[in-house]
Length: 303
Image: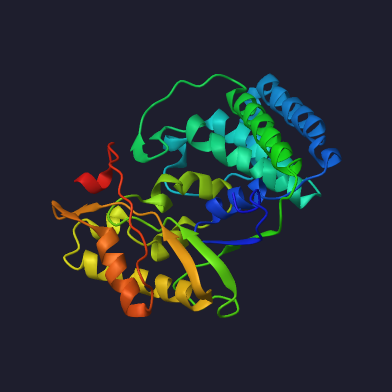
C-alpha cells in the first residue's frame, strides 16, 4: 500500500515466505519476463506427462528431481505429488530471471498445503486427501496466472515508488539510519496465537527455507507460550526490543500505527494493546489515539 500511495517504503519480517510474497507484490516486472510462463508451463507439463506414461519407473524420476528430506514426508505427500512438485520446482530453479522466478516460487508455495495431507493452512493436522494426476500442475498454473495479474496491476499503477523488503528479526540491530523514517505501520505478532513456522513448515521445506530457524525466533507462537508461566513477560520483553528499534528510526513528531489484538493466556484475556502502550511510553512514544473493533473467529489463543 505504501508504494501505491507514492511513498518509499521498507518492510521488515522474520518470515522468509512473507518476505518473498511482499517482494513479488512490490516489484515491477516487464511484460516480456512474464511471458516466460508459457514456456515454463509447457516444459513442466511435458515432463509430468512423461512421468505418468512411465510410472513404473518412479524411482528414476525421484533421482532426477529434488525432493526435500523431512520426517514422514511419505505420510504428508503422496509419491506422485512429490514427483509433480519436484518437477515444478526443478523447472522454476532452471529459470535465469530472479524476478520471474520469485513470482513462480510464490505460486508454488501457495499450492503446497493444498496438495499435501495437511488439513488446512492454519492447522497442522493430517487429513487424507484424494489426489488427481496433474492436480499440482493445474493448481500451479492457475495460481501463477492470478499472481501475474496482480503483478501487472501493480506495475501499471502511476506513482508507485521504491520498496525494499528485508528478512530480519526486528529485535536485532537494524541497518537503518536513526531518525530517518516518516511513519511506521505494523501488525506485530499476537501472543499465544499462531505458529507460522509450523503451519508453513512444508512450504518452507519445498522452498529450501528452514522452519527451525523461524521457530527459534518467532514471537508470540502458541506452542512456545501456551503453557509458559512467563509467557506475558517474555512477549513484552520481545516487543520492547521491537518498539525500541521503531522509535529509534522514526523521525521526531512522526507517527507509529500498531494493529494488535487481545490474547488469552492461561484462560485469561490479556489486553495486549494496553501492554504495548505502557512499553511504548517508557521508550518515549506518546499515545495519540486508540481505536477498538470487535472481531470474532476461531483462534488458538482462545484456549
